[in-house]
Amino acid sequence: MKRISSFRGGLPSLAALLLAAGILVSCGSTQKAVIDSKDLSYLYNPTKSPIKPRYNIVNHGDENSVLSVKFFAAELFFSEANPQGVPMAQLVISARLHNVTAGGILADTAYSSLNIVKKESVPEYVFRISFRVEPGNEYMAELKILDKLRMQIVQAFIPFNTLSKYNRYNFTALGYFLKNELFNPVVRENEYVDLIYNGGRTDSLYISFYKPLKEIPYPPSMLLPEKTVDYDPERVIAVPYSDTLPMMFRTEGIYFCSADRQINEGFTFFNFGNTYPNMTHAEVMIEPLAYLASEDEMNRMRNAPGPKAALDEFWIGCGGNVEKARELLRIYYTRILYSNYYFTSYKEGWRTERGMIYTIYGPPDKVYKTADGERWGYRKPVLRSSWGGRYHLREEYLFFNFRYRANRLTDNDYYLIRSETLVTYWDRAVASWRKGIVFRLDNPDDI
Image (cartoon, rainbow, N blue to C red; front, side):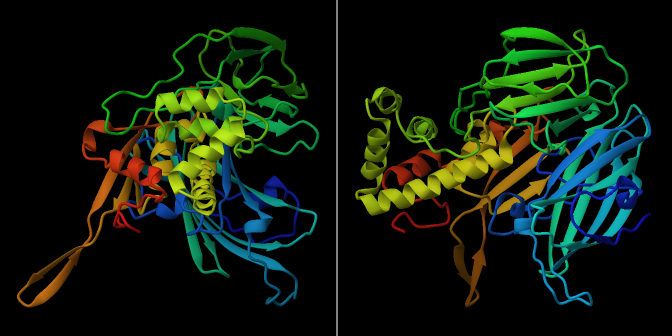
């Protein structure tokens, strides 16, 4: 086990930040490992946790995998109450690495105490943790981060594997000009990137372009599967490989990059438009209304000569007045924004099944992670009963179960197990929104 102490801004050297073991955490998990089953609802509720780190893991050879953790300066709490008298954030990281293939046994551990000195010109701070691994295994990294000044803990789970030399864990994406590590595979049309292959020698990089998937999932009450990318690429191009080759993906869609054309593994970039994950144009803001509006209403708004006027008319029709419509719009599109932030996979986050539930029902009150999925709970109205002269309160929850799905394009693909939630209150939820009431399962209809 190694300890790490202080960090004074910028990107620290790898040697100074190695933790001889580890686990880390992210919102996406899979594989069969030992996982804490406590409530993790703060992962998807921005009001419950001020720190939202980003994670990225890359294999370097057969025996070493490096996990990068990024903290945003705007989310850290800096205090001058320290012997140095300088603005400093204080974090403690504890990590556990499980070998899933070997039955979830503990493979490595790490502990780090970080003193991050604030630098005005540094918007983010990146730390790297090195794991001892073996080829041919699946792993689960578990991370707990303690903010010592706030006395708050965030936890995450990151799955990765060393099964292949060609999968996504053998690539490093960098910004072309600053050479900064990219933690998010979503790019914009004017953004230059580098893609470094760490799995060995290769002469060419094969890039397959797929049109973006625009379908939205069916309501949870319908026992119909979610549509996936099951179509052929529009085109495949081969480019000479170079770790300094500037690449730009101008057209919206999916770009699957492989080091071998015969192997269906690689790294994926996504272009969902220049404003993603935000929605700033009426034409784009109309599309998520498909969860609330009929097909006829959607077609009228899409074909309207003034998209903004059509959008305003829809929300005023729900709220009854401009002030209420603005409040509904603010809440609805804030949920869309966070759906894009949390659940982006091979399609926009709001188009996923988790994004659908999050948008209509709101952040879950309970989140439990298992070895192969997530379980979301929404609190029902509290039941009050009396027995023996005493009143008893009982909480019940509506649960949605999501299962991880292996996907060559992304490691954040989950699907809703519809047969396990037969009563969803979906129609009631949609009707509530259409009446101008933000839906909450535990609220009476008139609130």
